[in-house]
Image (tube, rainbow, N blue to C red; front, side, top):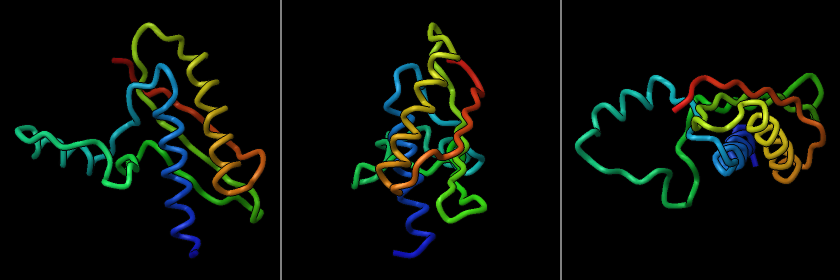
Length: 119
């Protein structure tokens, strides 16, 4: 498996973990997702692909750190109103850490969670 493919698989695992956390509405969309959504307003499209992977988003960025075993994960989320941001971000951080450990076998990734909005 190439490093690029491993990073994509890891990003998918992180996105699934984030989206499975209570209080998370969605990952922050990037410009490409916003343009794609504006063109497809009249069409209904399922979220994700046929393999059950969430759509690629700029809301998750996974990079390798200095050492081969150090991963840096940045997550940008939009939360549902009525959930405390501090509680949701703690749960997201725990879910992301577990996903990185399970997918990459690495322990203690550096995880940062940024709340970009509420809906």
